Image (cartoon, rainbow over all chains, first blue to last red; front, side, top):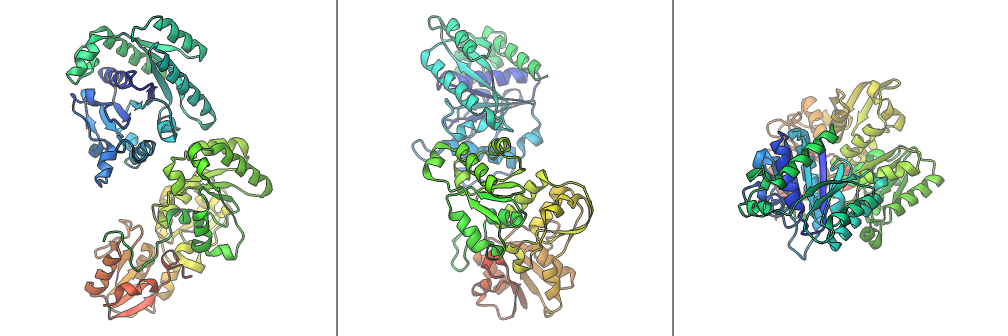
Amino acid sequence: MLKIAVYGKGGIGKSTVTSNLAAAFARLGKSVIQIGCDPKADSTINLLGGKPLKPVIEILREGGEPSSAEEISAEGFGGILCIETGGPTPGLGCAGRGIIATFNLLDELELFEKRKPDVVLYDVLGDVVCGGFAAPIREGYAEQVLIVTSGEKMALYAANNICQAVRNFEDRGYAHVGGVILNHRNVPGETEKVYSFAKEHGIDVIAEIPRSDDINECEDMGHTAVESRPECEASQRFLELAKKLIGEDK
Amino acid sequence: MKGLRKVLTPFAPDQSGAVSVLYGLGGLIVIIDAGGCTGNICGFDEPRWQDVRSAVFSAGLRDMDAILGRDKLLVSKIADACGRIDASFVALIGTPVPATIATDYKALKRMLEKEIDLPILTVATDGMKLYDEGESLAYKALASEFIAKEGTLDEITLGKTPLTYGGSFADVSLEDYKKIGASTKVIAASASGIEAAKTLGLSYVVYSSAAAEIAGSIPSGKVLVCHDEVFGKTLRDKGVNCDIATFFTLHDEIKESGDVKITEEDEFTDLTVNGGYDVIVADECLKPLAEGFKGQWIDAPFFALSGRR
């Protein structure tokens, strides 16, 4: 089973990258689960035709006691099982605790044991700000972290923080950094900056996603580019990345 | 009102159950709390605390430990304690604090294993469940570290802890657990004993010697037993015409028509008034809930409910 957590600065395109990558795995015939770990709960919306998914925390808030994965998930493009952790009302409670509560529920429901997916993708909010947001890279969850960044200064700053956090967790048996995904914003010197960053940290740039109107137009329709325009350049890059990750997993 | 207790005090929680299984096995037991849970366990839920020495400590978590996630400090404190105490293992017991700040027990185990040459058990109790579930988790942790098919062992009783049976608990040693796979007979004496045997994949019999002892003295008629499920099952096996009502786990394999798992005081009261029972076998702490009951009450102390041995 390929278990990947996608991290990166807020607004850098993590959900877009994760959803397109999920769709690419699905197009390659893989059984996929995508778990959005962001209180905004919008990670999987473009796998579900633009329809928001009710987050797990919302179900628990209403007093629900889910006894099966079906009650907290929805199937999207290519049979991808979509789950959103969600979070508390902004300004209240503890979002990190919400992620842990969701993961505990997934364990209780034996989601992975019963569904036996080929790929699990965790789409995680921004930086690793507390224990809850590190939960996706704990033992038993993701085995590798993919960092999405552009050449923008603050995106690279966040990427650096994520590398540092993962390194700090080495003695805990957490996931390792599997590589950087360069999501182009077309800022000056972008490619050089990101490759330099990757070299400095001893990791690879494993994919470059071009800035693409295809992605934006497909998202306007509630789809991923890989679903609606599989032939476009951006989709091809996601399909190549998915094949690469499957190859490494073998 | 759902969940409101007007008569009964809170039952022993899961962390107390975990300690109940591990107490007396020669390990260093570290309760991951600020101190209150440890006080509750040692002061109220562990009758052996007054009689038998055991290395039970609080992690002594403070506000900044929770804010900063200072796991390394905890590891160094435990390593230091292991240097002073001759322990056969270290057990970390969860409470509401680590559950709230999402302490990662697998990570703590890895970190401790690098520092200490002892088996590390982690029991992710959270203080939100009842003692029998904590006992089951502790058995699971024991199973993952110790239990093998070595040696010979005639008979072993699982789940006969002080929380269910007060002073009549089974004194099982760590050496016994290590040999459990070779045991000729496994007796599950309570709900957690059943779970433990299942975890280990062992065939077992359900039997409560405490229940068997009183079975002959129970008058004929329709009987309600409010205790652990195995206690009730044993009475039934001994010919007592009883229904089981339990605040704790009720396994499908035990449950018969008329048996119920209850969570509210009112549910018990309703059974005593409307159940048509002639006899109730239960801890006397439940008596105030059965004011309308006109039949005979036979006291069956249940430490996890009342703290009575």
